[in-house]
Structures are given as C-alpha cells and as structure tokens.
Image 1 (cartoon, rainbow, N blue to C red):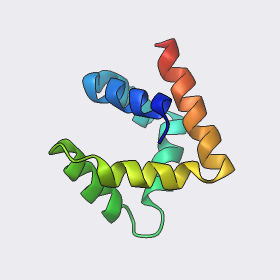
Image 2: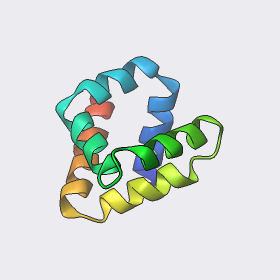
Image 3: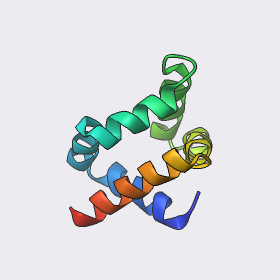
Image 4: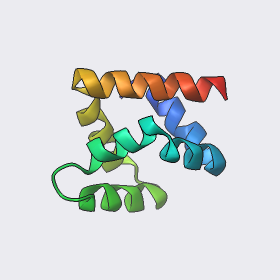
Length: 86
C-alpha cells in the first residue's frame, strides 16, 4: 500500500467522525462493497477486528487487492482527495 493510503487510514483511525462521514458517502459505500465482495463481509469484519486490536495486516492486504483494479485505485484516490479537503 502506498504512503498516501497509509496516511489516510491513520487519519481515519484518529478521527471517528471523519470515518463515519466517509462510510456514509457514495465512495465509502462503494469501497465497503469492494472489500466485502465474495463472502458477505465476513473477511472484512475479521480484518477490521484485527486492525482494531492493533494488527492491520489483513485490512492492508484487502486494500491492496482493491487497489489492483483500475476502478478500485480510482476510488481510493477519490477518497484520499476528499479526506485532504476536510
């Protein structure tokens, strides 16, 4: 994962209101759909729980997977831009 995305994740972790706003946005919903595709969100839930306990490796792997597709990479770029504006 690139430095910009890592920085975005740190910002969101430090600012729950920003995270909630993102998750309610169209781009946030699209990201959730990409991350939970295939198993109705079970992997995402496990990855989020691990990240909350201090082990973000699985969540990072899932984000890397999303960013391999052109649509996923563009989505993450849009999210990064919107976070910079806040």
